[in-house]
Structure formats: C-alpha cells, structure tokens
Length: 580
Image (cartoon, rainbow, N blue to C red; front, side, top):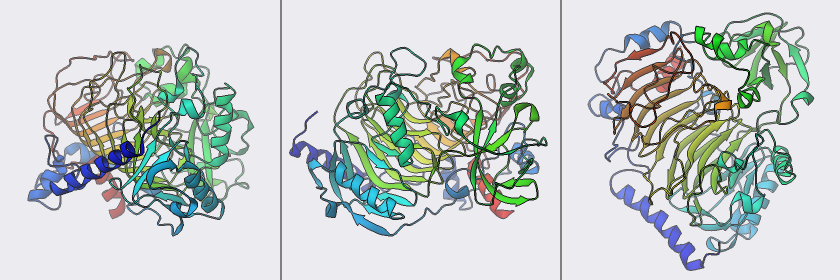
C-alpha cells in the first residue's frame, strides 16, 4: 500500500509525541517502574518498594517459597528459571562498537525512499566483518523488505522507540509468498512465524525462505526438515534425574567446554517421554497420545545446551537438566544449526502501514520481530504497532525481550513462544488496548507458549487485553509472574497438538482486573502446577476441561491476595542464585 511522505512523517511524529507525553506524565514511554501510573498501575513489587525499598514489604515470605529454596532444582510444582534470558539472566547486554550509520549507506530518515537495502547492506557488511553496531539515527525509515539480522555479535540500534521508526509497507506474503501450513488446510503460517525484522542465522533464513517459496513448508525449529542429518557427538549411557547438571556419555572426545549443542530425547512406543513432560500423573498414562499428530511432530525434544565442563566421560551444562534422562528415550548430544549469538535489536518502533486485522489464521504477515534460532540474544526498547503478530520466539534459546510493547489496531499473537523455545525471558512488557474494534472472525491471544517450549518467563507485565495463552503442544515448566491483566483473550491450539499444559507451570502474583479465571487460574487443569497470589476470579467465557483424569497434584496458594512475598518469582530466584 502506497503512502505519501506527509503521512509517513505524521506517523513518525505521532509515535514521538506519544513517547514525549508519557514522559511528561512522570515515566518512560512505557509508564513508570513496571508500567505504573494507570488503571493497571504498578505491580505489587512497585507498590511494596514505595514503603520498603527492599521490596519485601515487611511481610514473611510464603511458606511455598521457603519450600522451593530447599529444593530449587527439583521442586515438583515450581520450575527453576533463575538462569532464564540472555547470558544466564545478565542485566547487561553486550555493547558492540558502532561500525556503520545507515545514512552513510544511502538510507533516508524522512520516509521518502525504501531504506531496507541500505539497512540490510550495513548489517551484512558489519556482520561478515566480525560484528558491531549498525546505527539508525532518529527519523522514519520506510522499509519495503524484510530487515535481516543474520550474524552474531551484531546489533541493530535505533535512537529509542520514540525516536526511530521502521515503517513497513508490505507483508511477508507480499515479500516472500504465501506460507501454508505443513499440517494442511488453508491456514497461513505467517499467523505464527516470521517477522519484518527477522533475527535468524543467515543460512537458516535462506533455507527457510527458499522452502516457503517452493511450497516445501519447513519445520522452523533447531534442526528443521533435516533432523536425520545432524551428527551425533555422544550418546548418554547413564540415567540422570531432572535437576541434575551433568550426564555421562560413551565418549566425550568430540565435546569441549563452551560448545553449544543439542541434547535430544526421542520417545518410546508407549509415549513415556510425553507422560513425563506432563508430570507422570496417572491421567497422562491413560491419555491417547497416538492421534496427536501435531504434537508428535515436535518430538524428538531438542534442548540446546551449553557445555561448561568435560571431565572424562562426564559432561556438565550451564543449567539443570529439564527432564529425567532415561535411556529408554535414547538421549544423545548432537550438532545443530549454528545459532545467532550475542546479537540484539534496540531502540526502535516497528510500525505497519494501516491494514485491518486478518481473519483468524489467514494473517498476511504484517509481523513485528521474530527471534529464530537465537541464543544469548536480546531485544530492548522495541515497540510494535498495528501488527498481525508482535514478538515471536521460534526455536529461541536464552533470549531476553526487555521493555517491549504491542499497540495499535489489535493483533493475533502479541507475543508467541513456540517450536521448542527454551529459557527465554520477557520482562517489562506491555500489551495496549486496541485502538479499533476487533473485526469479526479474528482472535486475540496474549502471551503464548506452545510446541514443547520450556523454562520461559514472562515478568513485570501490563496487559490491557489478551490472556495467558497456552496454545496446546504440551509446553511445560514456564513462569508468568508480577503481571496485571485484563483477561479478555482466549487460548488457541488445534486438538492434534495435545494437552494445554505440561508439568511445573507457575502463575505467581497476578492481578486480574476483570475477574475472569480462564487461562490464569490453572490449578484445576495443569498437572503439578502452582497458582500463587492471584486475584479472586470467576469462571466465565472460555472454560476448559482437564486433559488428564485423576489427581493433578497442583497447588493453589494465597488465592485472592496478589501482592505476595516475594512479589516476583523470577527475580527472587535470580537473587537467590546470585547470593549462592
């Protein structure tokens, strides 16, 4: 869709003005500490800090928290997520020196010409030369193509989300082609994949887009359509329980400290691996896994692992094992896609040309940013406006999304975490109330997890719409904490994707402003889960039945009393780790 220069400049001014107005009201463009100062206004942690800078609020910590600290790696309901995010939860992102200014590559900051070739050329040259920062000075940059960040140690940095705007004029369907579903039907995979800012290793991006154009719909995960071509480096020879840090292998001659590898688990004919992901509850053993074709396509389970020590045949990783390592599941350490490492996108707004939201699962691909096969990467101070899908994690590992925000006419997935994404952190995030009514036939989700994704964290959020979407596909061991939500979205997920939840999902300190229980109060549906310190809520709207029969061994604690101590489960775990 064509747009005049005047309209482009007007759009840029509106973004900048909104940021300035927010700052004038006593905060950042995202509100105060954790988006305070509105009807959703600050989280319990921020409120506590007003009277007690320690954040403890003078209260006695929950007994459940004290219980967790005694067995942090093996607690039955609460996952260990203290190392989620970039570089094990580091607060400081890598600062690469500025190597290029896009204006010197011919980009125009007034929206008068397509800046994508200049931006992509700068990223390519800087990345191939070993890395650095590509700078986008203040202004509006029209992009008529995908912005591709495909090299490690490379940062794309604007002047701030209120000052630098990427104005996208075309969808992924326009640029790459229709992306059908590998499961058949007329669904558009742009409904959950791809971004107009695409963080992905250059070779992986090329293979993905070539496959899409050839209508050979690819698996987007760590090994893609070529799972059998990845080389086995070692075979695990002794069983180790979930929470251990090491495995014993047949030979460690091909392994070294600092190597990034995959620990792969296959499944047994009775689907014991899937039972285990569901907590080994009795109902999982009687669940019919055999017809869950979409879920079965995610197996083997692929866990990217960083080796920290090799001693004889003993291999130690940088974090505890996510599951029991049983020999029945043929655990092995393999090669993988060369991931994107130590790269980031900072300080910009991604705004789409005005288009209505598409009917459900027919998205054109006006998507914001995707992190695909990223590891120890980050996205900081990025605002997505008028998008089909805001921020996507597709086979992402230990990637931090900080100070991100989705606004505008409404989106299908504001945030999605899928295709075996593990140990990621989304913090200080916001989903704004939509600016136009939802068109008929559309759906709104919220903060999504699916596809055997595990140990991901959403922390300190303000959600003026949406829900805690778990899109089936048996995600497990994820945390949502210190969040305020107007719970009006719905979860998705085809029945062939299997259960909504695996074991060790935790919702901790959640204020629900409209009193709706669905997707937030999960003690009656998620096995071995913890629902702790949420508002008093009532079932209405979407109401689900448990996937598993029998006892779920879930915990419901401090119900009706958000503002518990500790107020933020991730931050408390991180502080505990640092003290130790």
